[in-house]
Amino acid sequence: MSERVIPLVDQRHAGFATPPAAFLPDQLVRPNGLLADTLGRPLSDLRISVTDRCNFRCSYCMPKEIFDKDYPYLPHSALLSFEEITRVAKVFIAHGVKKIRLTGGEPLLRKNLELLIEQLAALRTVEGQPLDITLTTNGSLLARKAKALKAAGLQRVTVSLDGLDDAVFRSMNDVDFPVEDVLKGIEAARDAGLGPIKVNMVVKRGTNEHEILPMARYFQGTGIVLRFIEYMDVGATNGWRMDEVLPSAEVVKLIHAELPLVQLDPSAPGETAERWGYAGANGQHDPALGEVGVISSVTQAFCSDCNRARLSTEGKLYLCLFAEKGYDLRSLIRDVPAGQDSDTLLASAIGHIWQGRGDRYSELRASMAPDTGTGGRRVEMSYIGG
Image 1 (tube, rainbow, N blue to C red):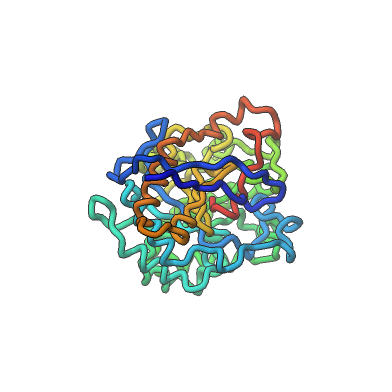
Image 2 (spheres, rainbow, N blue to C red; image 1 turned 90 degrees about the vertical axis):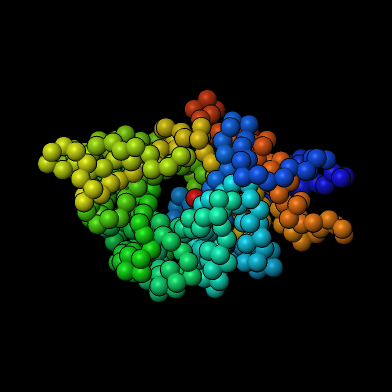
C-alpha cells in the first residue's frame, strides 16, 4: 500500500502556520479494541464537536471581542454530516472507545441533533455493550429539548453553570442570559431521566469565586454532581493568566470549612475529577448528600491516564485539549482513491496517530516559559469542545 498524506490543517484561529504532514504507514493498523499510545494510555473516550457556534460569549472560551458578528464560522458544507460522524465513531469504537460525549460550541444549536444521537445509540462496543453517550451543554436550550434527547438515546448531560447570582452569570456569559433559564433546563433534564446530571463551574479568581459556596449549598442533596474546574489556558484568545487560577485545593478547603467533605475513590479509569463526598453526622460520606468534584488540570495534571480523543466538527482529530495541531480525517471519508476502503484507511490512520501520541501538556506546563506553550498557538476550546 502506498503512503497517503493526512494534512495537518486550520486550527480555527488567526496566524496559524502550516505544519508538516503526517503519513499513513505502509502496514495497516487494524483495530483490535486494545489501542494504546506511547505512554500506554488506551483510547476509550471520544469527544465529538458537532458545531463551532455558541449562543454564549463566555470570556474564558469565546470572548465577544474575537467571536463577533464578523467571525468566520465554518460553512455547513464543511461540517461532518451525521452519517459521516457515525462512520467515524464506528471506527473509534473498533479501536476500544466505549464513551462518546457530544460537545460544541453549543451542541444543541446543531439542527436535528436527535437524529445523530439515535444513530450513535444503535452502535455497540467491541464487547457488545451499549455506548455511554453523554452531552455537554450551556443549558440554554435544554428545557425545550430534554425529552427529545432522552427519547433519542442520550443517557445523561453535563451543564455548564458558573454561578447562581444572576448578575454574575449574565456577566460571565456576556449575552445577558438569565441563570433561571439554565436552572429550568437542569430540572427538565432531571424530569426526562437524563442522569446522573453533572454541573460544571469554571472558577476564575476575581470573578466568581464567591459563588462556590452558594453553588455547593444549592446542589447538595439534589443528586446532581457539582464540579469545580480550574480556569485553564485553552486556546489563544481568552487572555489566560496564572494569577486568575484558583487552585482546586483552595476550593475544597473553602467548602469543607462549612460542609465537611471526605475524599472518594475515582469512579472510572481516566476520571478527570477528584471526588469529594459530603460527610454525614458520623463523619463518613452520606450518599444522600451527594458529592462534588474538582478538575485540576492546572495545579494537578492528570495527563498520565488521559484516554480521550477529540473530533472537531469538520473532522479533525486532536489528541489533547491543549493541542496545537490536528489530523484531517474528513479527507479519508470524502476523497478516497478508487479501489480503497474508507473505513480501512480511517482505522489505520487513527491507529497510527494514537500509537504515536505522547501529549502531556498539563504535566509540562510548569517547566515552560510564560506564554510560550509548546511553541505554537493552541486550538480554541470552542472548536474541539471541553
